[in-house]
Image (cartoon, rainbow, N blue to C red; front, side, top):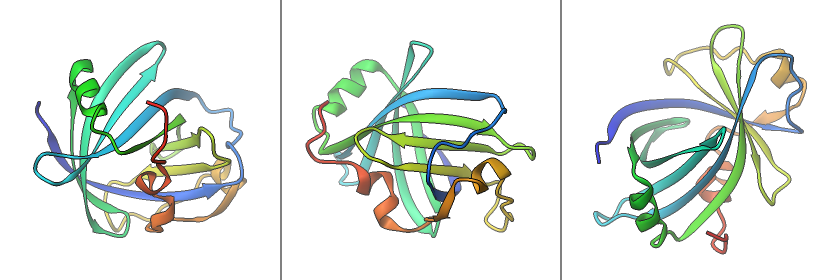
Length: 163
């Protein structure tokens, strides 16, 4: 499996509810699980399903700063996903709604299954990029939770999730 390395710069926001917008939306169903890899690093496997088609990923993230990660990620086969899944220690399920704002950024709004929790994430082109929070997010915004460990997907994942 080939993993591509990139710098991921993101901001996370806790929301009261799913934003209401007239903009086009894309909805995905996501299952992701966390495991310790053979080299000792923590990895994440993800099954992402849209319009009945699933893709499978392996991701390894290394924190570089608040909201900044070195990310290695690549597509894996369904069988590799199943093999990794047997080693998973915790996981979560969520619905992801993708909404593009007026400046071209994609806002990923995650609604977590089994939790009353909605979090929006946006990936930025550079660390010094000034985020203009779009109106559809501002209307339901509670607070910026970038860098707050309790709101990381890994922290939100539960140990007894059904695989």
